Image (cartoon, rainbow, N blue to C red; front, side):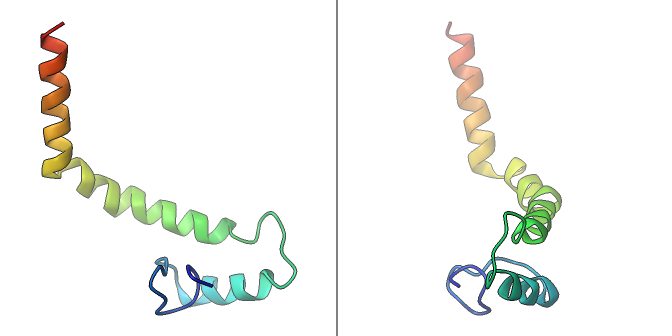
Length: 73
């Protein structure tokens, strides 16, 4: 509920069709009932979140810190 329900504080970014499919499938859950949502979220991370993270100041600072540590060895 806290991740699948629309407008919930921890809602994941999935489409309406997938959300409804999960709601139906959790009534008689299987090991695969979240597979479609996982693929969608992973795809969004791969195309959006991860590239944005790689361009972030915090990631660049980490790389600089690691490079400085490596040069001090």
